[in-house]
Image (cartoon, rainbow, N blue to C red; front, side):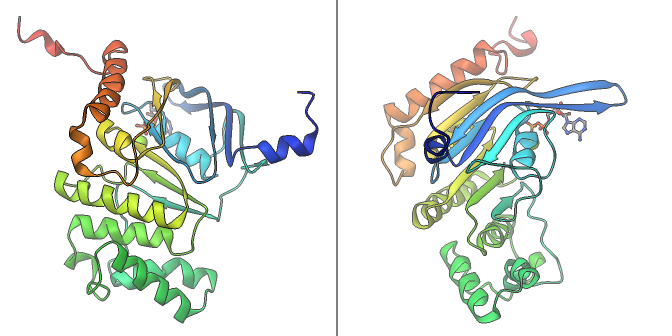
Amino acid sequence: MDSGIPRDMDMLSAPYLRISDLVKIYATRDGVVRALDRVSIDQPRGEFLSILGPSGCGKSTLLMIAAGLIPASGGSITIEGKPVDSPRTSIGIVFQSPVLLEWRTALGNVLLQTEARGTKREIAEQRARELLSAVGLAGFEDKFPHELSGGMRQRVSICRALIHGPDHLLMDEPFGALDSLTRDQLVLDLQQLWMRQQMTVLFITHSIAEAVFLSDRVVVMSPRPGRIDRVIQIDLPRPRTLAMRDTPEFAAYSRQIMELFLARGVLNEHAGGLAK
Ligand SMILES: Nc1ncnc2c1ncn2[C@@H]1O[C@H](COP(=O)(O)OP(=O)(O)O)[C@@H](O)[C@H]1O
Ligand SMILES: [Mg+2]
């Protein structure tokens, strides 16, 4: 398409991640599932962007396409102007389940990728120890996964994702399986890591509070087929504190999203009609 802007200017102003009219259709035995329907998102470098939506709206699909792990059915996705058409190596990924190797220590799990990539052991180990310490795991380097709590295991998997200094951190409901206190702590730790390391983060969640707390912008998705319902800019100062969750400003953002979910039937205040 000719926008009238010279091509190199186009490249300069291009965002880090550009998703345009992305469509994903899965073929199943029961027919086709349209998981994503013309999704367009631009993410500037350094932004903390959350994708928030109900179960089944295509969030994980979007993350897998952004990681280059599955192909799109239509539309385009680029990183700094280059199409994503194979698994990206400059990313870190964290899933809901930490999937650690049981026979490796915490340190050994964090170092896994650096061994595969041939990074010098001393440099990698120093960085791994720094990361583990940054998430409160100093002294736990030599513990095996079965000796760690769920929250600690997820911390190890975050360190593993960050060990090679990725440009882009992709997280798919990373705190979904944790108790609320551990979750609060990890949300704080993640904000700290992000502020220190100038990463670009794509964070997937179905928690309104988590999205508002962490994000520069929240992309709210509608139920299947996944479309973007609204993009909300979160203008709260950083670093955000747990006490901020009780402020009227924070509550107003949460309410705005909750009202969208009520309007779309994602939440229903009269569920089941039991009160009648
Ligand atoms: N590999 C697959 N094959 C067929 N259907 C799939 C596959 N992966 C996901 N889906 C379907 O696509 C839709 C979106 O799934 P997903 O991206 O996992 O949503 P979310 O992460 O928001 O819960 C769901 O209806 C799901 O059942
Ligand atoms: Mg998912």
